[in-house]
Image 1 (cartoon, rainbow, N blue to C red):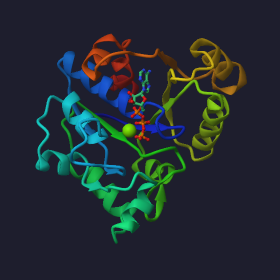
Image 2: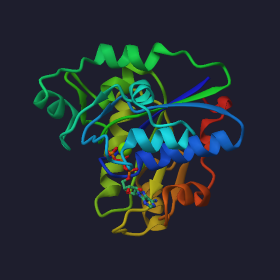
Image 3: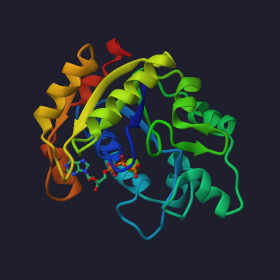
Length: 230
Ligand SMILES: Nc1ncnc2c1ncn2[C@@H]1O[C@H](COP(=O)(O)OP(=O)(O)OP(=O)(O)O)[C@@H](O)[C@H]1O
Ligand SMILES: [Mg+2]
């Protein structure tokens, strides 16, 4: 099995887009893939663009209450940090429970498992842990998603330093072009120049159209999940 944690430099950088592209591409190659977004805030059952719904669609699965529970058991309404959204609903999510959930199903040896975090690396994902701490406890390598917005270079290099200090392996950085972009290739060049040169850095240009069209048009990313590299 290959397993990766899809982490971001912040919220809205493209973690779900990359997760769903990977699911789509792996399935197109005939590979088994499991994707989880254990904790989600800002969730509404009526939203066809929520992270769990997009992930289920990319897995070719129907969106049912059972399927939502299987990939995103902790869903909170307020569009704020998950630990705060949970508290507003009188709940506390413990890292041990999230860890147990993520490890519960043991996918087959030919399966890729992707886990999308919430927000940025140091966003609290539950009541007692940031994403970074959860990742360290899981032990999976990270695919770090960043953007090309002004500030993304610093956010990315800071995230890389943090991952290094926590001895969390980084499989690759995916740079997803932001709506307000400082330049996709300039951003990648600068990341290489200022400290990320030793890592695979993949560009994801701005994609247009419906989500299914974006999956079709996206450059190949699925090789990042090859078992040999896990
Ligand atoms: N390369 C891109 N091309 C087109 N749209 C993009 C691209 N990258 C991100 N987006 C869009 O930006 C928005 C935010 O992306 P996405 O939901 O994937 O971010 P996220 O990191 O998963 O956010 P969250 O922290 O809320 O989970 C989405 O509408 C997504 O489709
Ligand atoms: Mg997301």
